[in-house]
Length: 163
Image (cartoon, rainbow, N blue to C red; front, top):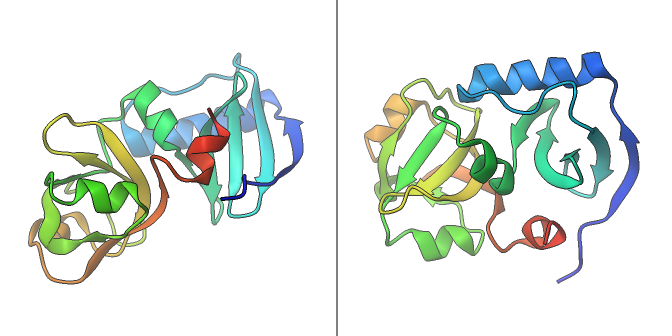
């Protein structure tokens, strides 16, 4: 598996960092990096990346910032989560999309098209980041079919780039 290709990495200005940080804080319910932290912005093959103090802790997809799995592990957000049963864990960590019947719990404030993070029910550990296909209340109904499109998971090329 090839590494992710990173290009055009540049240091962000204070007000750019503050804007992204406040957007992430509003979406996730916890404070993340501040304008005093060294934050770099870089383009990659799949989406844009945010390097905080040298680690890839954020991504930008379609103009919307979100945390990577490592970022979720570091900042411990309290919103935009989808909890899955332990039977779904091996599939999601291998890059599969999250299916409706495997969902145990979801943040009710999630809207269709929102970026979300997926965790397991036993340990609450982050497994993946994805785009929700349904709202939070629809996710809780456990309907059949794809519920969250997986864009980054533990063990994928972005995860391995950060090692």
